Length: 138
Image 1 (cartoon, rainbow, N blue to C red):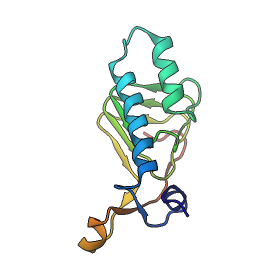
Image 2: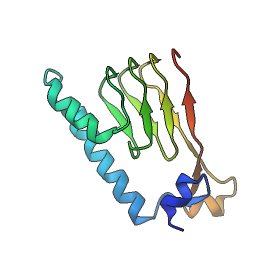
Image 3: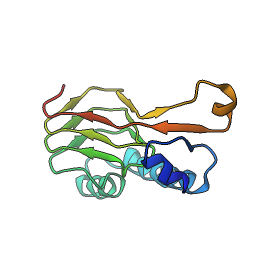
């Protein structure tokens, strides 16, 4: 079983040293950088970057830069939601934001848990549990 498969199943996985996961996080970081540096007056460019970064984002979502994700593909944003500046989505597991949610500035969603034993932590192990916000959460 790959480390990615372990991650998606909520098992302990190698988050720090697995080449596949490292590459996926680097690609997400590059997309975040492009979005965060994009011209705020160029809606078309920002929308195109966000579609790459967050493929499960519904219509009419407002997401203000900067934003940071680990993968992006594990995030679901419902229509009409607003995410203020400096949001971080540690999406080793699914992060689901319902419809018409308002997320304040500098808010973080952290799916990762780390082992209590230092020896296991030092091997880079973590596991991820999903986060779900229902509709109309503020």
